[in-house]
Length: 290
Image 1 (spheres, one colour):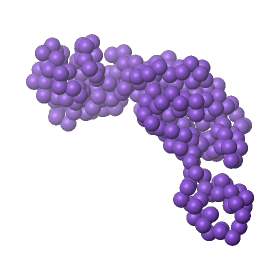
Image 2 (image 1 turned 120 degrees about the vertical axis):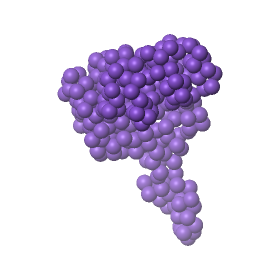
Image 3 (image 1 turned 180 degrees about the vertical axis):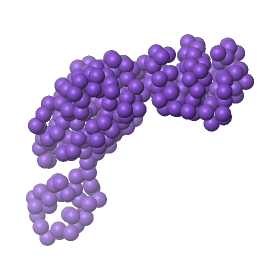
Image 4 (image 1 turned 135 degrees about the horizontal axis):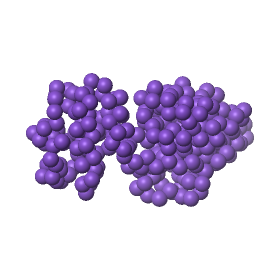
């Protein structure tokens, strides 16, 4: 490996500025942590509620670094074959069938070679020569056993394939893991990462995000929208509106040609930001339009 960090950013200020150019408005805390992950070559664990921009942060870093984005989407039941690599059994069988006259030792040497290896996201990111961002998305949805698979990647940026040996990254990827905190991640995994909690942004930052993503929206209407979303988040809802849903609501208002956020408009469009009927009913009863 020829360098420790990925070298995408020059400073904290440079990180904030370039993230903004990529459409991601970051607080100083976010920019600082991203810069340190880049400079130190450490994986970055980003935790927080769904829809606050964790995955978008990885996409923005990839765009800035002109890097390939390799994504491992975690889910319950994901295993080594889906995360790391597996052997192409059908092709191996064809090879064995074609070589019936040869001995097993010769066949075994061939079928556990590169030609029969199917790389999955973790191995793909390690083997690449080009700038790479490895996104391990929704880590908390994977089983605990999957974390053990990741430890070698996160600490040494290498993968061990028993039949081929240890494969070490020639160019270290920028690694970003996301978690919605639905289960506690192991201390071993956390110890290998820098940590960033990404919560709902302050109102001023969310107004800037909305104006950036929906430039045609009137400033006063954006202000009203953010205040209503803030009121919704203060309620005890099953699912509070995310930043992505705030932006969706702004686009909805723009599409409707709305000039103000009156009561009728709030009630008729609550389904854009609230996804459960009991939340819609609760909000409709309590909200007073800004």
